[in-house]
Image 1 (cartoon, rainbow, N blue to C red):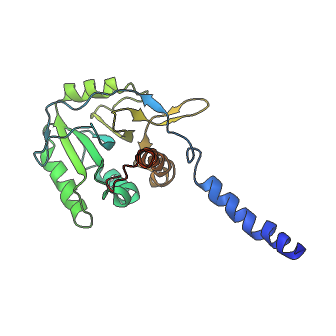
Image 2 (image 1 turned 120 degrees about the vertical axis):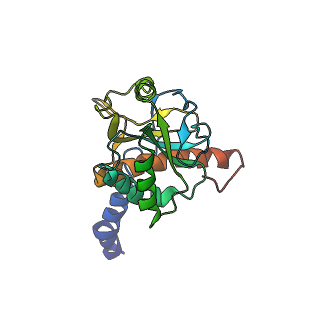
Image 3 (image 1 turned 180 degrees about the horizontal axis):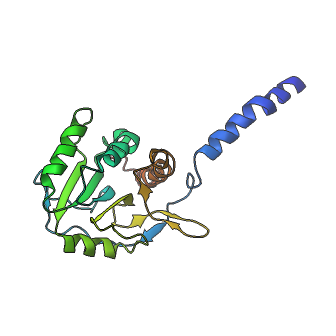
Length: 213
């Protein structure tokens, strides 16, 4: 009996502790709201001609800027680390706001991804520089767009159009840098799982289970 207790303490307990802490700081809480009630998109054209809305969707939102092809590696990182796992959930979409005039470049990115990915939940929408700047401003983010109207960061928007993130001791984590695969694999995936868990728990509570999310 004593031998079994010693073995448990030496081998099993450390594994349990690791799994607990590996689930992340937000693993058992609600993800805080950074900016409530963000605006929906304007009457912007999309790459596939469909009307794109934030309402009723969990959205990963990005801003490509004019150098979309130059930064296409960021889309590949996001695709491999997050999109591939969750694109089958119909209530999840990945939306990239692009400047008007970059439609051909966006098509090249989608075509490249489609070689090894079902791109059904990738959405590219196009707006004027003024519209992009105005839309980004109302998100009330600390970090601004660069001079190309882009940023490597993406943001989580919930079904009620609230921008969600981490409120840390000294500051707030608003978005996730697609240039760094490790940040997507760890912090972003952790936070994204929290959002999905919130909706699943609510559906279960209301006895309205669905395969959408």
